[in-house]
Image (cartoon, rainbow, N blue to C red; front, side):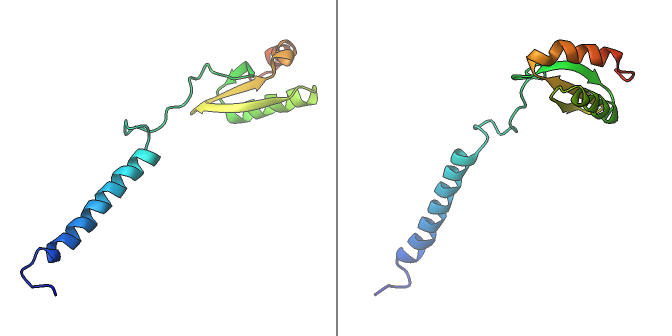
Length: 109
């Protein structure tokens, strides 16, 4: 039987706190941000992957309008917004030359 002065009254809460601390450390290690405490970094702006940048515009509407012009010409494209007041229009490399010609004649470019 437990005596009021025995260590078993203290051992239970100490074990519970130790388990919680270990679980917290494990969760931070398993689901953390790489141990640096910083948010994940975005890829470099020059990294366009498989696509080629054909125009950089300052307005979202202009970029979407250029994308519509490219689509009408049968060129697949996408728009990326890497920063405020900046929009990049990207196409596949095989369509880049034609897309640049259309972008050069586009009034907002």
